[in-house]
Length: 140
Image 1 (cartoon, rainbow, N blue to C red):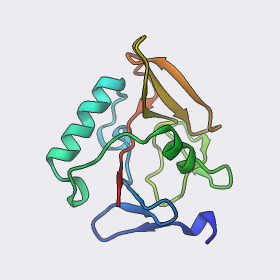
Image 2 (image 1 turned 90 degrees about the vertical axis):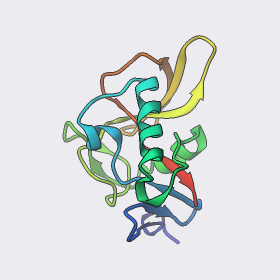
Image 3 (image 1 turned 120 degrees about the vertical axis):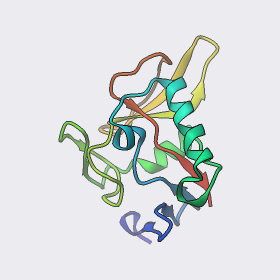
Image 4 (image 1 turned 45 degrees about the horizontal axis):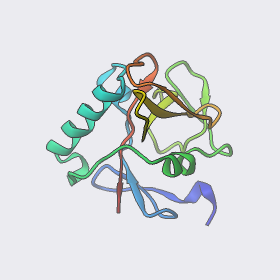
């Protein structure tokens, strides 16, 4: 199976990654709300998506580092909110954030994020808001 064929749209509105057996929401919090989210605000967004049973499920969460690295694919191209190239599948809603929070945190009030333009993962202050968003995942 090619990397381009591993994602499938579902009638429930979620996107399935058949290679890694995960499901993703098609929009990130920026695309859904039009607002940047710091780490804690992004967690609140995840709780809200679970309360409204987004896609029919209530177990949405931030991706792990490995899941985020698997989501990023340098062979794929999509446009972010600034019309810059990010490397995710075109089934996901365009004009999204270029930074996606991941579940990794430290005791120093830092949280992990992946840059979908270049695949780099870094730890930043969890209060950072500008250009940050949540994209939620669940096990299928």
